[in-house]
Amino acid sequence: MIVLSYFNDLYGTFFATRSRTINTVFVTVISLLALFAVPTLANEYWLQAILIPFLVFALAALGLNLLTGFAGQLSLGTGGFMAVGAYAAFKMTTAWPEMDIIAIFFISGFFAAGVGILFGLPSLRIKGFYLAVATLAAQFFLIWLFNRVPWFYNDNPSGTITAPPRTFAGVMVTGPEAAAEVRYLVALVLLAVFVFFSWNLMRSRFGRAWMAVRDMDVAAEIVGIPLLRTKLLAFGVSSYLCGVAGALFVFLYLGSAETIAFDVNVSFLVLFMIIVGGLGSIAGSIIGAAFITILPIFLTNLNPILGIDLAVDIAKHIEVIIFGGLIIVILILEPHGIARLIAITRERLRI
Image (cartoon, rainbow, N blue to C red; front, side):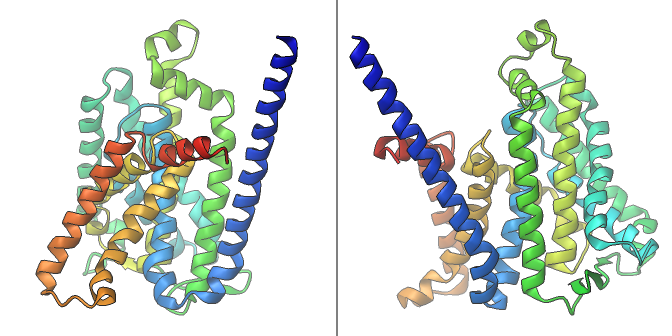
């Protein structure tokens, strides 16, 4: 029995070490390809229309997943918190033109964090569907506020905010003259920074407190976890990431935007990303963002590739049906999302 136990331990240790090595190699290869190969090989269409919005929405999905997947607080106000970050960045760039644009991106998140904490106060008394409705009210209120107060868009008659040209280390980062490669790299590096931050945060006592509250808040309170402070911290960190994503959404992707760019559809879109990718999974946030962002573009170009000639409206309806059907199939196969499906597959293959 002792010998058998020894070999079982040795067997488990071998495959655990092998799995960690494969993970490290995989992440390193993907990082090198994303950092060096993609900007060199991808054309402007791929960078501007596909990869930059994917990175931005991956950051927003990461922020929402910290709140909903890890802390168990359902939110439908993601679009509103992204708008706070975008408008804060716009006001700072126009008020202080000499201010570093990367610093503006980081600072804009704090404004969204403050708003998120404010609207997270009801989380001590309500939860689930009722909390979702409260955050949905925040979404509508913030969009109404940015529409009705001209100060937020500098009294622009069109009501739009536009990213002014700004440089970092002598390189144009925002504005019409900013290269798509530069904007892609900025979005990629910022996403990598926040993924690393989130990964370490979830391994800290704060992350463990969030998961304890998510699993059973009454038991968490009994063992000494302060519910209000823990929930508000989750709202603050989540809203911070969403605020930075909102600033990147306008400054690196759209260039100019109205409040309709942050309507409730954006909130639901980001929620779908973390559900499909995997709740409570950092990798699931990125996988879900890739699925929701890239798959519709693939389906749009599928007809010309296959040589099928369909009317535009019919083709669009078929795309929506296929897209929705794939989401349903994935959630039936694995309710915990694509990330969990991949993890199960790897366990079976011992990878």
